[in-house]
Image: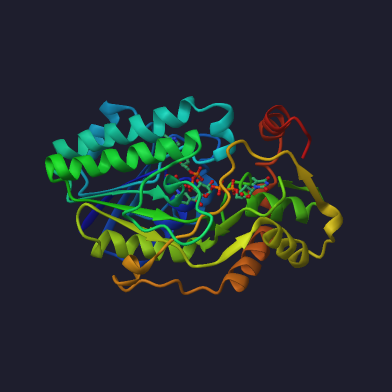
Length: 334
Ligand code: NAD
Ligand code: DAU
C-alpha cells in the first residue's frame, strides 16, 4: 500500500493528479493537505470526496506541527502547494516566498524526520528564465525572472540539497504550461476561454508574441506518475509536449472554438519582466518511456467544451472578490 501526502491537491494540477492516481491504482491512500487559498477549490474534487482511500485536511504547509502529524502516516510526498500566478507575484510577492520556499522547507524537514521513501517537488520550466532560440536542458543555469519563478527555483534547489546532504530520495519535475479542466480562471487559457464564452474582451499582454509550450494536464499527470515511480533519486526532469504557440495563436484558436471574432482582442500593457519564450528539451523523460498522448488541438477543443459545459464551476469564481482583485491589480475591468 502506498500512502501519499499530496499538498495543494485542491488546485488545478493537484486535483487532476489525485483523480488520476485514484483511478489508476487501488493500492493507494491519499491525504490532501491544502490551505484553500483563492486558488484552492473543493469543487475540483467533488466526484472523489467520499472515496475511502482519500482524506482532505485543510491546513498550511508552513504549519510544522500539522505537517509533522500528517507525515507520520505517509511514505510518499508530492508537493504541489504554491502560489502559482506570475502576475500576482509581481504585485504581492510575500506569500510566494512564504509558501513556495518556506513551506517546502517545512515539508522537507518533516520528511527527513520520518524517513520518507519519495519526495517529489513540483517545480516549473519558468526556473530557467527565457530562451530566444533552442531548448533548455535540465543542466542549464537557473535564471528566474519573476518573484514567482525565483521562489520556485529556491525550492527546487533546496529539495536538491536534501538529496546531496541527507540522501533524501527526491525527484524534481519541471513542467511547461498546463491547460485543461479545473484551472482557476486567471491563467491565459482558462481566463480567455471563460471570457470568450461570456463575450468579454481578451486582454493580450504586449505584442502577444510570447511563446509557451502547452501541455495538457492529463499528459502532465502521467508524466509526474512516471517520474515518481521511475525517476532517479536527485534528478530533475523537464516535461513538455513540444506545442510551442505564441499568445495570439492561442487567442485565435479560442476565438474560433467559441464562435467569436477578433474584435474581442484588447492589447494591454505588457507584464513586467515578461519572459519571451519557454522551450524544453524533453529527451530525459522520454528515455523513461513517457510521451504525451493528447493532440494539442483536440485537447484544447475538449477543454473549451469542458468550460462550456461546466459554468457551475467557474461562474461563481468570477464574481465578488475576483472582480475586485482584477480591477485593483490590473487597473481595468474584465
Ligand atoms: P494552483 O494555484 O491552481 O493551486 C495551488 C494550490 O496550492 C491551491 O489549491 C492552494 O489552495 C494551495 N496552497 C497554496 N498555498 C498553500 C499553503 N501554504 N499550504 C497548503 N496549500 C496551499 O496551482 P497549479 O497551477 O495547480 O500548480 C500546482 C503546482 O504546479 C505549483 O507548484 C506550480 O508552481 C506548479 N506548476 C504549474 C504549472 C501550470 O502551468 N499551472 C506548470 C508547471 C508547474
Ligand atoms: O511555464 C509554467 C508556468 O506556466 C507555471 O509555473 C505557472 O504556475 C503558470 O502560471 C504559467 O505561467 P505563465 O506566466 O507562462 O502563464 P500565464 O497563463 O499567466 O500566461 C501565459 C502567457 O499569456 C504569458 O505570456 C502571459 C500571457 N497572458 C496571460 C494572461 C493571464 C496574456 O497575454 N494575458 C493574460 O490575461
